Amino acid sequence: MASPEEMVDDASETPSTPKSTYKDPDGGRQRFLLELEFIQCLANPTYIHYLAQNRYFEDEAFIEYLKYLQYWQRPEYIKFIMYPHCLYFLELLQNPNFRSAMAHPANKELAHRQQFYYWKNYRNNRLKHILPRPLPEPVAPQPPPVPSSSLPPAPSATAAPSPSPMQYNNMLAKNETRNMVSAGIDRRKRKYVLLSSS
Image 1 (cartoon, one colour):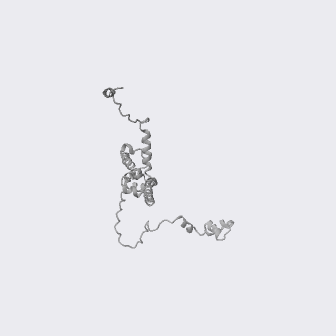
Image 2 (cartoon, rainbow, N blue to C red):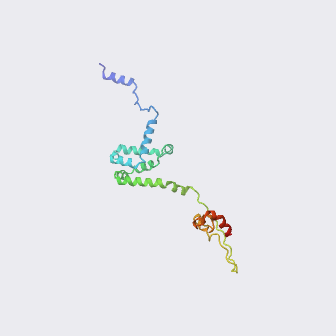
Image 3 (cartoon, helix red, strand yellow):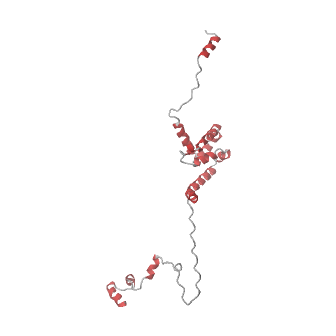
């Protein structure tokens, strides 16, 4: 049997093996996809409600994981996100009051409703800020007032609007062919009636 001094000498001769570090076989692609999928699930208030109902937000390791996921807000990662609301909810989940409030169904519905209204009005609200506002139309100078004279005033173009298509029917001449049938005049006599009336 070896003495304790020999054992120490043997241990000093063999180099200590370094801790083996884990290497992903796919270079981290699988982890990236899993984290991307999870963070995009946070855009759904119903999923956040599910996490709160099942007490995930009471686990300190899960809270630390949510803090870790904040790296998705950096520009090199944000380009992969399809649902940007997930980043807003991730930021809100850092607050313990929000985490506990999402356990109540009424708060889940409120968040869902507010998200819907944001999506509904997003385009219109965005266009208000993006599109340039049209320049105001220049106002034409008013002509000087004409001294009163014996001439009748000229009709203005805006005073009499053009009649709608429905009003054209009332403006037909009384001896129009369409009106003759309703007036009881026979079609065979129409040519005679038209010639005699002219």
